[in-house]
Length: 196
Image 1 (cartoon, rainbow, N blue to C red):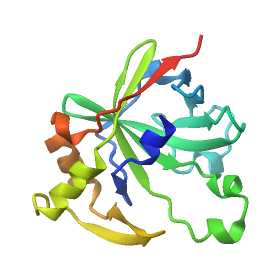
Image 2: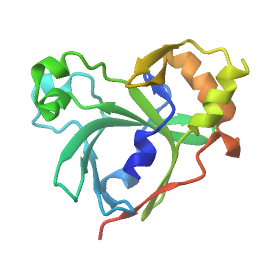
Image 3: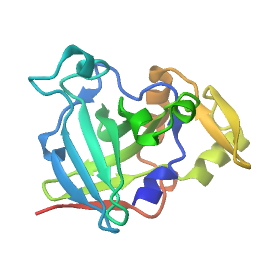
């Protein structure tokens, strides 16, 4: 599951959400378990006693995801927003404000640029299903010039990483256009079960 989301083919400088598309679903709150036994804990990002600094970049619809790799005990935190685009819901993942502490090296952290990643999502009481864009399908769109969305190709450890530089509005148009095309999404679904 972690690999599936980590290999997500949509990396963007701008968020998928804006104030008109943000929604909050209390069903996302709580702890979920993936197929590898890792924990995904979602909580409200803003708490009543938070100081103003902790509220920067967050709002009432922001979740804080704490992902725990149960094999090594390491944790990572991300800010998550639910985005409603027509009849579909997506999660927008972005490193939490303490990602530099998690990296543990100031020099390295200052040379990393946080990006947004997206996954289509279905949320029910006891199951969370992710659908990530298929990287080969997205590459094919670009190679055959079927889409014209602003992006940069960045060399990254021997391969090319495509980073979308389009505005939030353009990202929403792109995702909305292909949201119901089955071939647009990876065949392996990420399914999390609610921890009891």
